[in-house]
Amino acid sequence: MNDFPDELHPDTLAIRAGTLRTEFGEHSDAMYLTSSFCVGSAEEAALKFTNQMPGYIYSRFSNPTVTAFEQRLAALEGAERAIATASGMSAILALGMAHLKAGDHVVASSGLFGATIQLFNAYFVKFGVQISYASPTDPAAWAAAIRPNTRLFFLETPSNPLTEVADIAALAEIAHAHGALLAVDNCFCTPILQQPLKLGADLVVHSATKYLDGQGRVLGGAVAGSTALVEPVYLFLRTAGPSLSPFNAWVLLKGMETLPLRMRAHCDNALKLAQWLQAQPQVARVYYPGLPSHPQYALAQRQQRGGGGIVSFEVHGGREAAWRVVDAVQLMSRTANLGDVRTTITHPASTTHGRITPEARAAAGITEGLIRLSVGLEHDEDLIADLRRGLA
Ligand SMILES: *Cc1c(COP(=O)(O)O)cnc(C)c1O
Image 1 (cartoon, rainbow, N blue to C red):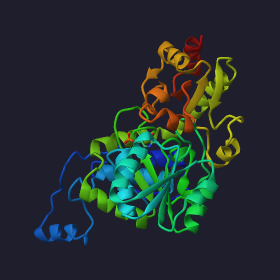
Image 2 (image 1 turned 90 degrees about the horizontal axis):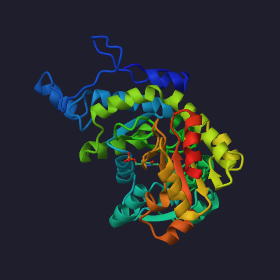
Image 3 (image 1 turned 180 degrees about the vertical axis):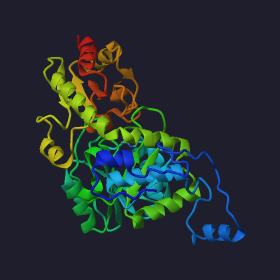
C-alpha cells in the first residue's frame, strides 16, 4: 500500500491515501470478499497467529479492503492509526471497552447522539462506569465535573440537533491536566472540516454511515488516534467482532473520494438555507454555526473549515406548525438519517428525542417547534422552494 507524505492536501489524500493495488494493476480499489486467508506452511501460520509475522488471517481481525479504508481515514484525520468498526455505535462501544474499567468516571457532553447516551446510561453504568454530563459550551462545567477517577471526556461538536460548538482545545487542556483522555465524535464535520487530533483530542470516533459514505448505502464506523491508544481498541474488536465488512469498506472508500467536494457543497447549501430561513417571519430561530448570529460563531470560524451540513430551526406555533412544515415538503426525505446527498427533514422532539421525558427535552433545548435539516446537494433554489411550501 502507498504511504503518502503528510504534506499532501486532504483533497488528494481522500482519493489516493490507502490505495491498494495488486499485481493486476487495477485502477480502482480491489474488494476482498473472503472470511479467511490461507498460509503457505504450518510455520507461517504459527508466526502469523503469534504476531511475529504480519499478514492477514481472518476478516474479524482484519482484511485488505478494510485496511485501505483505515489508512485513508487515518491520513485524513492526521492519526497514526485508525481502526474500522461495523457502525458508529460499535466504534464508541469498542472505545469504552478498551479504555474504561469498573470504577472509572466519564464526563460526557449533554448534547450527544441519543444512542450514545443510551449506551453510556444503560450499559457502561451496568459495568460500574460512572457518567456525568456537562454542557458542550461551558468548559468550566467540565472542570467542575472532574473526579479523582475521571478517565475520559467524550463529546460531539457541533452537537445534534442544536449545533452547539464545543471548544476542543480548551477541553483537551482540562482533560489532560487531570490525566484524562478526550474523545471526539467527528461525524458531523468529518476530517475535511475539523481535525480534533490536531486540536489536542486523543481519540476520534466516526459514524462512517453518515458523510464518509455520503449516499446512505452502508453502515460503518472507526476509531482513530495514536497507535498506543488505538491498539487496545483493535484488540477488543478482533476478540468481540463488531468488525467492518470488506464490502462496506469498499463502498466507504468510493464515498471518501468525493468527501472534500461534498463537504464544501454541503456547507454552501446549508449556509444559503440558513440565511434564507433567518429572514422568514414564521421562523423564530435558526441554529447554524456558519451564521454570525450563532453563539459560538467565532469559535466555529477558528475550529472548523465550514459550518457543516446540519441546520436546525424553530418555527412559531409549536408541534402543530412544525409537523405542517415536515408534512408539506415534497422533495426532502422525511427520515432521521443525515450526511446524505439527499436533504432530510426531522422533527427531533417526536422522533430522535421522542423517548426522553418532556422535562429532559426542554432542558436540552429541543422545543416542539424545532426542525432539523441535513442539507444535501440538490440545487439550493429547489430546497428553498420546498421549505417555502412548508412554511406557507
Ligand atoms: C449516527 C451517529 C452515530 C451512530 O452511528 P451508527 O453508524 O448509526 O451506529 C454516532 N454519533 C453520531 C453523531 C451520529 O450521528
